[in-house]
Length: 461
Image (cartoon, rainbow, N blue to C red; front, top):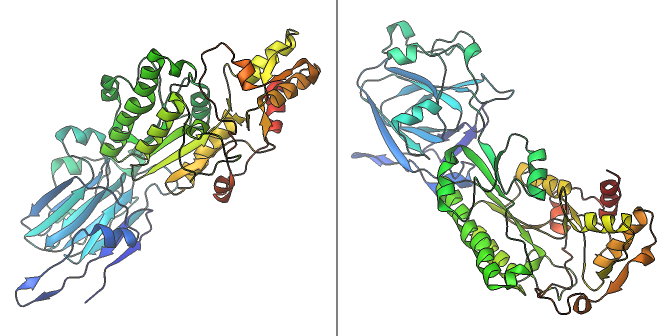
């Protein structure tokens, strides 16, 4: 008896599965879909939600070529067919074809955007389609079609199409030269109007931006207007970040509403549509007693903001495909600490700045590049620290450096303690040490840029 096996074809992602069929005088048995065994051999864990059956009474019945907006596993219960697949996804593989003859002992995994066509070679052929989205008549509007008789692809149908049973609709499909490739699933950036959101859109210009007030994670109705079935990745860059205001009654409710309840809706959506989720988190999930924080350090948030971010991390970690990117001291296009210090220097103001909190700056262009690297390299699910590299500095030391770069003496900046700076004010407890260990990110192949190099360029821009 043949062993279960999975082999690649000339079309990326199109896989042929050889199925063992033990039997005796009574007939045979096969495992048509066996998640553990098949995924171990390279079949995607594609999350099927519907099983469809199709019957062809006569040999010569031919259907296709249809590229559908979902993945599917095609197999036979009985009979024999000639199968043809054509890549209709954008890219250099567009128009590549593969043909395979199938019986009950062979199945084919067909990825989204690859057209499939089938010709029954025996009467009484019964097909099984296992798909990872629910079919509806309206779904046909998302199909991409190719003519069965296209001369460029030139599928060698065993039974000539002139003698085959073909629907009028299939005969009318366009030739390859007139086919518009099926677009790839889109990346969605939640929180697209923030500093990081703008950097992410610069990295992914074709991404779908979700911004308030049109999309608000605290409003369940917002989720209904997004075509989630056509989304391939969610990047969550939205958060309630008013650290001190979060310690008030109103701020506490708002922080939990955005960072936990709203994020929970994103997690639920990602799970329902099998969408990978990348979530941006914070150094505030730690109490700062360790001088450097690794990804596996137990969470120990001090204040409300940190508590909500820690709870959010726990929610995201329940997804089968996820990345949690922890960062600190973010600087980008918008109001931030560096711009404030530069403005004070230009106006001749001599500020007092906290000198007993330590970490590294993170520039949004590098943060977005690191995020794109994790996604593009298909890095394993999990937590990744992501900041700029370089020496650990205090806020006061960074302020002094900004003043120097603006032509002012570093001595214009007075270094004070956190307790002195916030005396008489409502403040959230802050981690003394916000430095994140970057070894895991570096091991993934991402090249880190020194924070001071970026600071010089940022102030010169």
